[in-house]
Image (cartoon, rainbow, N blue to C red; front, side, top):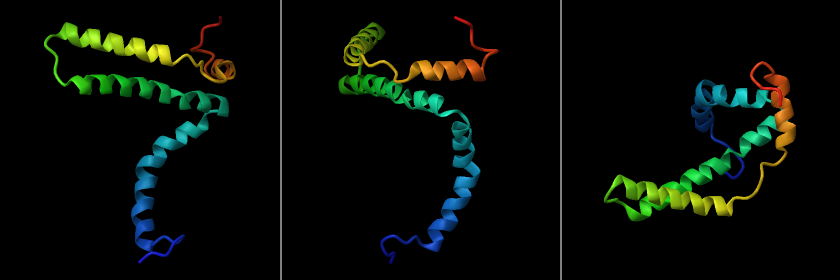
Length: 110
C-alpha cells in the first residue's frame, strides 16, 4: 500500500528507463527553443481542436452515400469552426522575430 505523497521503488524503476529512452529525447529539443517560440508551439492545440471538430462531425453521421457528401460535411464543419475561432495567436510578432533570428537562412525578409 502506498502512502500519500510517496512513490514506490518499483514505480521509479519502471518510469526512469522509459523516460530516458523515449520521452526525454522528444521533449528536450522542445525546450531548446526560446520561450517566445514555445508559446506559439503551444497554440497547436487550436489545430488539434479543428481536427477534433472534423472527426466529431464525421463520427456523428457514421457513413456517407458519396464522397461529395463527405466533402460537403467537412466544408460545413470548417465553416462552423472558422466562425468560432477568431482569436489571433498570442505574441505572434515576438515569436516571428525569434524565428527570423534563429532561422534567418530559411525566413524570407518581408
